[in-house]
Image 1: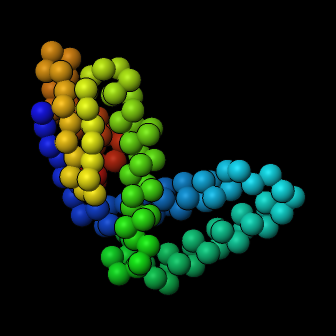
Image 2: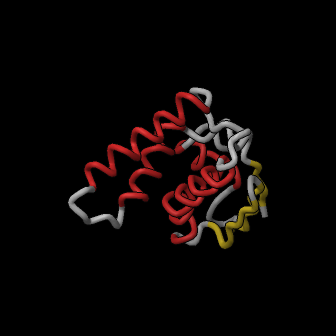
Length: 127
């Protein structure tokens, strides 16, 4: 068993990746002809909110939706990157509560430092 703590969760969520992911999710099921207009509006909304309400490299801790945006980003991150470790049976359990992570792993297959290195190769500011 090993535990990790996401360091400074709001500060270390990358803005560009967050904007692109949220925009794609909002437009994912939209098949109407106005999708280009909606895409432009959503893009403008995210960039305006980023420039006016937030610092250049992080999520504003004062924003009422900061925790929601961080949670959405982390779920996306887990779905893509942590799922691989689970699918290969290198880790038996992964669970997270806000910024605290618990992992149960098979020591014959993987070491805690390998897990940490794997995650930090993807986003070096996460753990």
